[in-house]
Length: 308
Image (cartoon, rainbow, N blue to C red):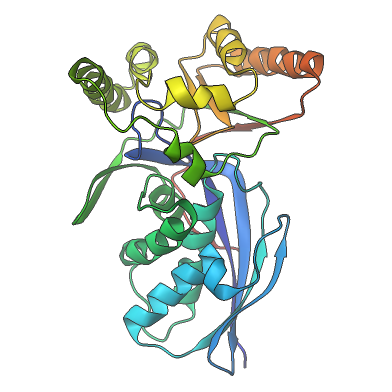
């Protein structure tokens, strides 16, 4: 009997302001679905991609690039077919490529005769993410695969750890309709920074981690400022500064770019403040005649998982 598995791979927010390529967390209720089925013939085949215009060539799709890396590691010559359903858009700053890569290795692993531990799949998911963004960074793919809020200390060797989950905070995601490719967004970053800038960034990052441990939302709000990516990337995002003003006026305890954008995130302690902020942002984009999607979500402890 042919085996098949359907998995959910959550979206994620990376950087959390000052944690460039270092910190990210999984999102509740925003994800993509993958169905992976064993094939009699060896090799990987992408049967369909729903919800986005992505390559069906296995060597050009992050899902099958990641799955191929896993199969090469285990020495398997099994064949698998993939059906990918994108429920949030690529280029949105919510870790679309990371979800595909994480979901693919998780699904294939479910069908292997001697599956690996989920944490052991991260290096192979990273191969898919690196294909999309032209560099290795795990701040999206690690939380998508493993769930929670994760900080990456090192890539050689790969070393990461879980941070406390601020799941009591409400999160508003605003995604203006402007596609930003991660590789392009990385290309506009400064290649050198001054010592004072580095000092400010390190200070904020240490303070952010402490705020998560202590659940100190005043400290979180004061720590989330980014001195490296935000100043240059915000120019790519429609109405960025106006959205920030609205978020702060509605008592957001943290606002910044999600990944490379154009999505932004804002943390709130109450639903009332979140909904008030959302209404004002909706009015802003309506007046600017710009389409914008909104998501109300939270940090999620769950990573990739089998969908019943």
